[in-house]
Image (cartoon, rainbow, N blue to C red; front, side, top):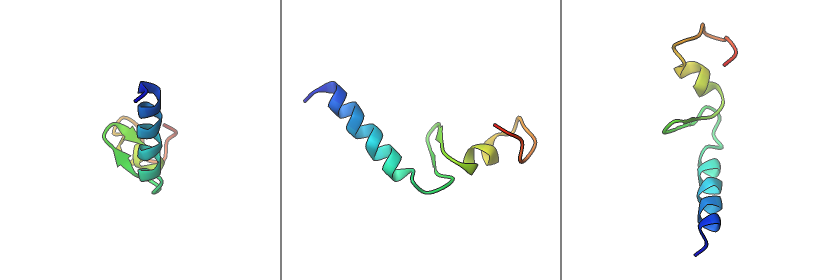
Amino acid sequence: MDGAWIAETAAASVLRGAAVEGAVLGSLRIGPARAALDTDTEPGAPA
C-alpha cells in the first residue's frame, strides 16, 4: 500500500468521526470544544 493513501484514508476517517460539533480526538480539537478546554483564555475569547 502507498503511504500517502494510508495517510489520506486515516485523515478522512478522523474527520468523519469528528463531524460532531465540539468533538475532541486526542490533541485534535474541533469546534467549540477547543474554547471549552482552553484554560489560558477567558470563556468566549477567540482561540
